[in-house]
Image 1: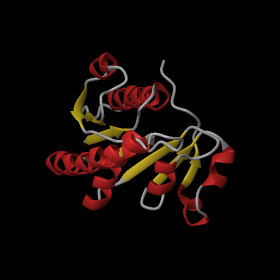
Image 2: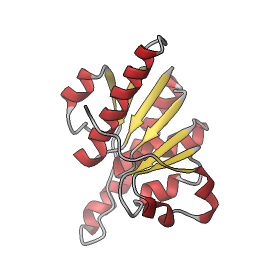
Image 3: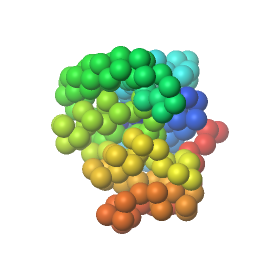
Image 4: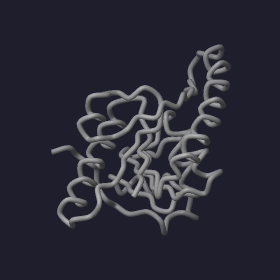
Amino acid sequence: MKIVLTGGGSGGHFYPLIAVAEQIHEVAKERKLLEPKLYYVGPKPFDAEALLAQAIEYKPTPAGKIRRNGGAIRNFFDIFKTSWGIVRATFQLFSLYPDVIFSKGGYAAFPTLFAARLLRIPVIIHESDATPGIVNKWSSSFARWIGIAHPDSAKGFSPKVQDKIALVGNPIRR
């Protein structure tokens, strides 16, 4: 099984991905399953050593950020960075063709999720905050499942996706 992890920009998005990877390895070992191949597709990882420790292969994909306050020039250039990230993520996902993509959201996940939608690769998203972020709101329309950490998070998603939401808590590292 091939699983792509994406999201980030900060440790708050990144380290829960590492916790999910730890759990995937543990379940595979307990149930004597073949060890899944894990990939992180996104911009520079917050902690490259954590990826190595969990045998997660890094596939670099640029992602631009939308700044709401100021930064108009940087926002303009980040449009091109994000566009390039979508192209790159599409080729990377096509070559890997993973079984599923797990996303923590954040600007870093957008190119990978956009490519996943184009390629019709199943997506699972997780929202740790009480108010869903822009990328998670957008991707909720095509995500197979939506995990949330706070009951209030469900209110921030469209009524059309409420049947896909499960209160699962936050992934934590051991």
